[in-house]
Length: 393
Image (cartoon, rainbow, N blue to C red):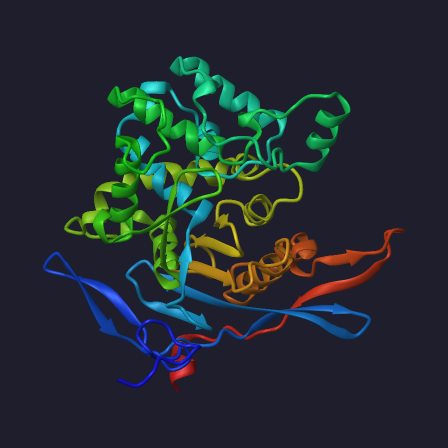
């Protein structure tokens, strides 16, 4: 047997030449089928300073219609990405399907914050406190912690000035965690250690996500998010397809197993669109700003490490709803690359009119400032997201 090369894995095949496989479900069994070799993602965003191309951020983008047809792509649509917080709108469908809206008299604003990653502002804390009071649940059960909370800089500065230590309700994921506690209450499951992967609420959450992504819980690729609960990984194009489904859940035929979740997802989508400040925050949050720039037409939900998902609803100039997913390979450098690439992507797919593009200017070309507030650099998105038909031509 020939020796294994130092840069190879246990198969003995160097990563650059290894043929990737994709797992599919055939009669209930996972089967690996060969696909094309991994593509090197192109540079999407350049960090410019004094005319010098200081940093380059590579990434991949894909737009998919609800039926799974790829409309546009750039880079590697097969790249495997952790959903992280982008899972929240989909996992929340478990609570809505279980009757949680009626059981706890949940408002649209309360649904939106459970599907979002809020900034920890006072309006977010008050909203979540109201839910806990009605449900009779103590916030002491929350397992999300308070690390890096609150995200909102003004709120953090005020708390520090007043000597107040942020609690778990200020954490960006507390809404998601509360939705899990509500499921425990409905099903009379123990609330202690609800974050464990083997807890009934996590099994239900995983099963709901699996249904939306047309797979089974056994085939999910799971890991643990920063807030302590499981999250799941999918190829980037599958993430885009899920967001296309969120854009218009009614497009699926009744025989599609996902169709039973159409009404819950419609409820979640409409709640998020109506309450963009609850999805993220009132200041300097891309998800909120995008939804406010194009009211009722784009649902935005990001995840950590440079992942962004967008549900593009049908409307003037857009006949067919679609989903867009974007991943910055290096994580995005404090969101500057993901922000710039996201706005540029939405511009190229025709989702932004000139007024909306102007409103999102600070995200489209995020600037770097010196100590006196003078611009000394900026992130510039440079790529062409051509329709797939043109790429094949």
